[in-house]
Length: 465
Ligand SMILES: Cc1cc2nc3c(=O)[nH]c(=O)nc-3n(C[C@H](O)[C@H](O)[C@H](O)COP(=O)(O)OP(=O)(O)OC[C@H]3O[C@@H](n4cnc5c(N)ncnc54)[C@H](O)[C@@H]3O)c2cc1C
Image (cartoon, rainbow, N blue to C red):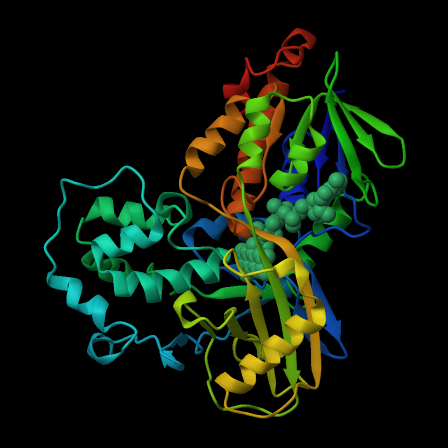
């Protein structure tokens, strides 16, 4: 029987194990998770009768979310789904010291300080010959529109998506959709208007979660995989051995695997594989992560200051926060006994001395900003913070080459997966897990496990890539 080790029980590891089990029921699968709970970044918490998310908040309803919704159905969780309030579409951007609506109508966009620079670009002449091979989100938006739009809108979007720096993040890696739109029509604004008409524009999608929060998905996967899942099993080393791989655990035990799928963060996988090729290791070492403190604040009183999905804060505002979600507007069912429920995100790659700050500091910072932005002196009735020092991988310039290098130098039958490779969102991760399961099924169907192949570093990597 082929033994498959899945490393890490975040959504990447769980979804991969689930799909491998579906496609290859005869393989032996073991999932190694260092914590005593599965789910990784996804963690929902109840306080009295209110629900708070300490990591991811929901699944965006996009064309790419088909597979995750299928998974929800197959797990029997459809009746647990809760849809974000569709009426709450309004987003804000904190600009020039104030919360400003992101306008939906063209006329309003002409007069809004957030978008008026963007609208002017409709008639801008484009140099279609000189499209660079790769560029940062900031460069791309400056080229298509102007620097002001890049400083305000692109910067805020990158903060909201990955807590990163728009000048360093690759447009190709983080927003491949925009590159597609550009290919369809080099006049990007026209292309965006067209997508918007078709209901596929950026920021137009709905959001969905579960009655018990997003961790309902990971805890159900964990229950389904209870025979495969080994909690409190911290991996301390991964060795390539004569036949397959040795997964060494902190308690001194070890597991011999024929196939390994790592769903660990890049920095951790790097530490655990000192014996792997140098190029593989240097590829992993090049990945950067942004730190984030997720501060949940609950107020008994309802605020009518800003009734919206949330707001983002561009870096130039020097506020030190990335953005705020208004949970009581999007998912009112999650906070029956709170008037106002907010999640404040603090951190990002440009945040100074993040690791030197503690939970109390982040809570105080969040309250200070909310009091200022909401023009109130209210103190929260509830507050809870989760500090994640390596929260979000950065899809920096050169991302595709880095991923290629890791895949090229991965030993045979060693798959590197996780949110730093094929997309950050849970939908991307589930899509990736299906592709991985199909590749493994192909290997098993072709009876590909052969000790000679397993002894070679890097020669069959294109098959495992
Ligand atoms: C604040 C925040 C908000 C987000 N919001 C959204 C959102 O609304 N929607 C969305 O789609 N995405 C969102 N994301 C992104 C998404 O949540 C993550 O990309 C995804 O959950 C990562 O899953 P993963 O399995 O790749 O990694 P992780 O969840 O990090 O899982 C890795 C697992 O490996 C385990 N591990 C680590 N070291 C070892 C070891 N030595 N031995 C064994 N196990 C080990 C860890 O304990 C962990 O369980 C958000 C992310 C953050 C940080």
